[in-house]
View 1 (cartoon, rainbow, N blue to C red):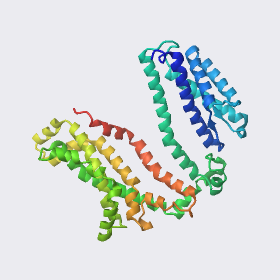
View 2 (view 1 turned 135 degrees about the horizontal axis):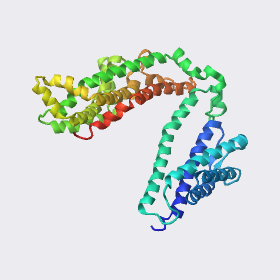
View 3 (view 1 turned 120 degrees about the vertical axis):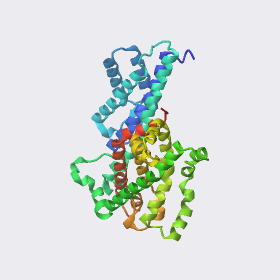
View 4 (view 1 turned 60 degrees about the vertical axis):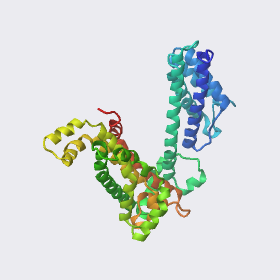
Length: 404
């Protein structure tokens, strides 16, 4: 273990691993941006990563160290052992841009990971800190890629024409000289596929679902959190049981019941079934928050002559605003993105929700870019809503975790 905790071992090992992460990321980004197939090279990553780590540990000047790594990355790009194999079609500018994109995150990422690490013997704290920083950087890159790459492909595909997609499926660059014609797929969705109606249907169904969910979950969660009655603990622990049952298991019974009662293919049926999936999780979230509120404030209200409902309305709900916002946003997202029930229960295009409308685009007769444009339209409103209310979302989810 003493050998492993030496800077001349830990540094190059972390450098090689980080070089693989950076090279893979650069290859993917450049491939999407240029339409040319770039790939990382194992030997080149080994050489460049080990060199960058040694330079970091042995040279104190950040500028000089970064310059050395940049020059080395550029030179290796023109050899068979390049860290990223670049297509000759990109020419010298493409090689230079790739070298910069490769060297900058490689060297300065290692500078953060190996900050304070010696060339020789490392303490356990220094070694663990370097490893944790590497794992943090890797996790950030990996999970960002998992989220960003599909979204990027979705957006870029929606801006393509059918001819461009057939000519080069790997080319996700866009031609800005086309101007507003880039958004022709979006224009056609609203003009020819009634996506404006789908969005409005999903919006008001989601809002109604939020209101119904709060109407039932607020008093229910308050009762579980504050009142004392027989079976309270059992009820509290079983709230999520309904939510844990896979919806696919209930799909056939729901379909049969709604068909027999005439609720299938109606907005009323959708509004009735959506809260069934959201009330349990809302109850669970709110009861934890209500338990965290000081009971003395409510007791003071009762002593002042308020009844229990007035206490909830005038004291508990104003104090629970962050939790109410976070629960409302979460429920809205569930209802907005729900697909299985809408696909199963709705057949009339005039009452399709947005997700059901997008599913109708999954046809060989409809260009693929229209399907991607529909997915972007479904994603952006919820994303904007989440980013705008993120402060309330985070505060509401964590406020009830500590009692006091």
